[in-house]
Length: 289
Image: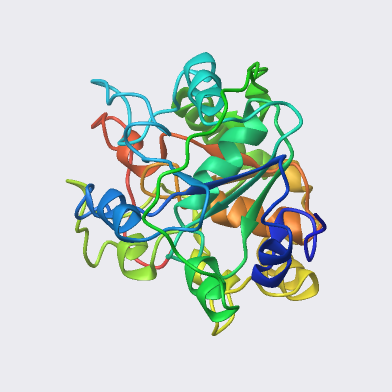
């Protein structure tokens, strides 16, 4: 099955290749305001053959006293669950949601983190599938169990302690760019509907994930994405970029956008804002900068 471009597959291509025996689909719909909403939506209708990937239950570890809202899951446990859903090293995985990819990108990133690169996001999500004539079903398919071994690449992400140290050193070195994917009003601290403290990490810049998409909810062209990010990072190497958001989920959207733009190797700050504010010793900033 050939997608439109690496990391993405369009709905007509997925529709044409839906009978591929090595294909596995994951429905990642979720709502931070109503954590059960995604599972309800899945039960009401999903892409045929799709398994439900719950952000809290499957794609995150339990919240700890020092963590953000969505800590990384144990890699072996994640691989075991994926295996239960029929994923093997040969499997082509497609992930989707109905929020422009804002939740599905978490599973896209997690699979790459544990060493499974054969994963793509459905560009335009559930809406694009329906527009292409794809049907929905309430039937839950039972897949033959597979076996997947996790080989996590921990250079793909950064801890709070390491980020704080790099930011402190960066005051003079200018070697790190921290990009926050949240909406501008949350970044500025005008409002904070989820976390107990408003604002952003000092030194971060705001590139809202929604600006990676066109009016139809599909990713912009590689050239337009490259222009968007190079306008902020200049000639800095992509490996010097760290992506943040509220809890390490939607930040993956900007990370994917940079990959689509050919800007490879940026990192994810998994803890993000919700972990940063766990310690009152860490400074916070408000306003546009």
